[in-house]
Length: 268
Image (cartoon, rainbow, N blue to C red; front, side):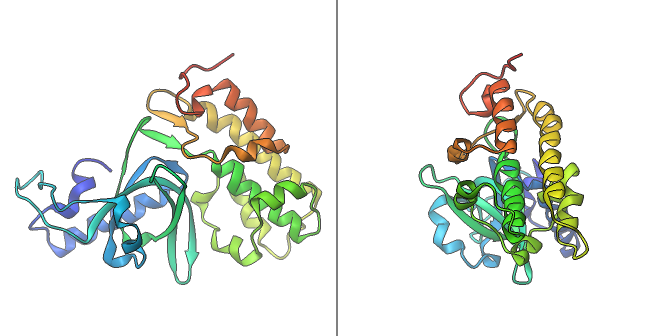
């Protein structure tokens, strides 16, 4: 999503069919943005009821010149926010994107209707940055929620820190893009009534997350354009002991630039 694709809504003379086609492309693309850091989202504020609360953290396209027409285009209802994309989830009857606004101080989390997003772009460096929260917060919280629901709690302090989700809340988050290939089927199975949720199942999921790290982190930590990045990351979770956290800590040591500001050099 760059160039024309990032600014299609600034063009004059598009037919309704062309606008609909560009919009469909954005909707298809943005679903794959889950768990990406440092993104710019162009949002139609007319389709996001809460937009007015956060206008000061956005930029307007009103002073932008159409790169294809050479004329100023006034689109006051289209504004861009930058930040970090987390999970997709149902909220009411609409799919929403959980987004951490880049306001440079205390994190602000918002839920943005997927249909309100008209474009997305990479921003910052590296160009493609991935959020470790997918493994350390999202999947771990899902696992702890299952254990708590089944009376299998073994990490009470970590559970208290992360909190847990109800069965209904987990069901609302059941999107393939929220999970990695090795864990997607486990997530699906965990919501099926005939699945036995026991120590074996939980350990299988934990091991799947750890195995996925072995594939994802080396393949994604390819400087300068790819990296797992702890951008506005709540590193308090690293104080706890859990197999998933312990495994991540080892990769964090090997690829120090997961923490912004360190060198892009793998440590043998």
